[in-house]
Amino acid sequence: MSEKIDTFALGEKIVNVIKTVYDPEIPVDIYELGLIYDVFVNEDYDVKILMTLTTPNCPVAESLPLEVEERVKSIDEVRSAIVEMTFDPPWSQDLMSEEAKLELGML
Image 1 (cartoon, rainbow, N blue to C red):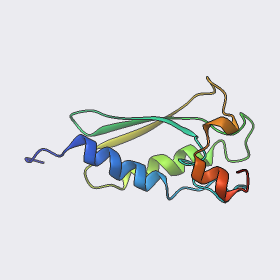
Image 2: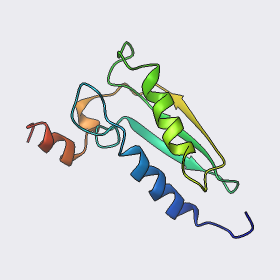
Image 3: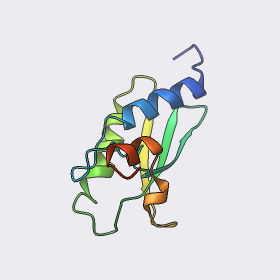
Image 4: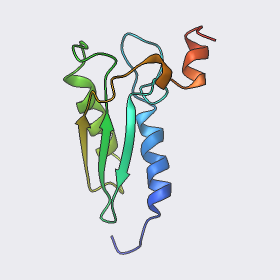
């Protein structure tokens, strides 16, 4: 890849892909649910995503991070992607976007 890619634009592209991943029990994407804590993109287009789950014993604890990783890896500009799980801080409804709260009738 000879031409440089704007990492900010790539970050937006990554977020848009993450927004296509839904929690199977809640009809809201995982980004709006607040499950994505951070997305890092370095100058080599390696991506690291820090995410959590609604609960540590979530039924999709194994498959959801893999799904996020695979979808992000499918972006042409991304060289590699890794998802790191954390439960610090623990997820709470306060992390949800206004859009997610509205979708779930919480507003």
